[in-house]
Length: 545
Image 1 (cartoon, rainbow, N blue to C red):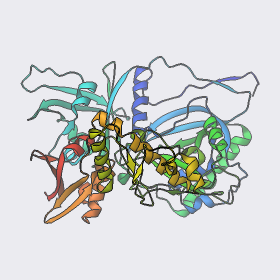
Image 2 (image 1 turned 90 degrees about the horizontal axis):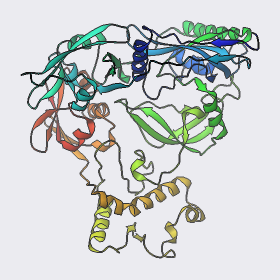
Image 3 (image 1 turned 30 degrees about the vertical axis):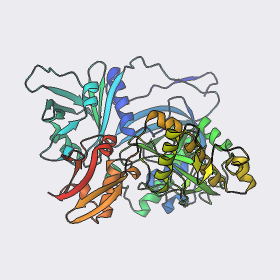
Image 4 (image 1 turned 60 degrees about the vertical axis):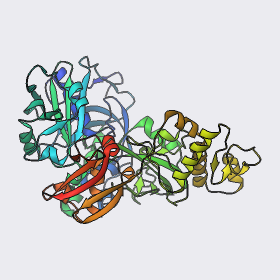
């Protein structure tokens, strides 16, 4: 290849050119999720064959990942991204990308044409509830989503309604009747919605995506919940054949300096990594006992951050010496209802930096169950935990009300006393002198900051409510703490375990979920945003249909 040769790389996306392609791209990205790190045309990346193997066998723990390669191939290969095609599977509607890579000769320059078809878009996503997919129900839109994303209704009509014509990622046309009715009045998709549910085989927990461009065109997509996704099934022989076959293809492309294609799925391992991101990750030099955070997608497709500790640094496979792929063995601080790996790659995590602002921190539980007050702000009502935590907050409030100069106390220690009196609670240097562990230091310091910030809490008049909610099922009554759930799906999974009815609430064939508000009205679970539900719920009822 000539030194001055320029390769023009125009991505080929499914659908028509211009505006239609732009809307397709945006819908595809919404269906892929915010945590999917799709490379860009012309970007320099590292390609990790081990990660590609994991995707092919659909299991990060499969023994196939430990097979000895029959070809001599590096554990990471530096490449240019030549083209990207955004695609969708016909049967499952799962999105994936076909990425064309070329090993990085320094003389190749790739130009990516400017896209002049960008436009402002409005969109919303909603996790489907039992009422949304019921054969006798309609799709309930939140008022904010209907007003912002749909064309305005003619409110002079007795029952305002309009037809919404939209396309999915397969260019299939779907028509929904949008109406505004009921007492109190709500926005619904009625006619056409049941056909969409059947056509896409939707279930409780799946997500509906709606997008509208400024030119008025609309697009719809779906995201399948984790419990609806099945692993790729194949025999051990065919798996091994795939393993050797794709390595042979990649090895040949590397030696002949030809392009090779990989299929990249949002829920797969991140085996195509931006070069700068990779270099930044390895220069952090994560070691044993290093603290870190990692982002995941929750049951309701919201982002959740978990923290942990690195317990070992070693090669994932003896046949890929010196590879950074999953070379960090980790231990998580807390349990979770979503699957998490016990080995991660450096570019998947971030160093844990204690935040001084407790209201911007993620939910964190003390794995050793120490008596440390925890204030939580996580897309929902702010609640205090019972016992001494609640008493400490109340005591501090009373002190500040009766006397502005009153002292603040933590575990009986006056935080406003002279520096000599509270030397044991001074910043990290004092802890280190007493040989307290690093984790305990961070948590204790955060707690001090939490209590000293109480005056700001009082100014904002933040109220604390009980976290215990009664759940009735026939003659059985149990209590749950809504603050530990990240959304409806998470709550339903735990309720199924609590009452030994695994899978039956999700199937919505035998049981239905309702709840009573403080005013005494009964409502269907899932028709309100999760934060609002947490604010208004008094009791939850599981009843037979």
